[in-house]
Image: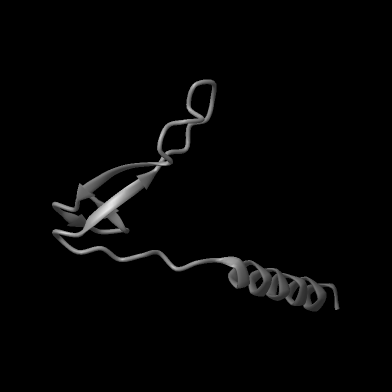
Length: 66
């Protein structure tokens, strides 16, 4: 009975997690991309929120780009 309850709760947790998850975007060679600036601090208030644009030169496995 305890195993069944644990399995049920785990299934609900997976379902709730996947509700809010976005799928990763796929880029191809030659695409232009911008990188969101994640560092915050004094003096960064007036800087742009994104770095780039950068051109994708190489697509590697596991959603990595060069």
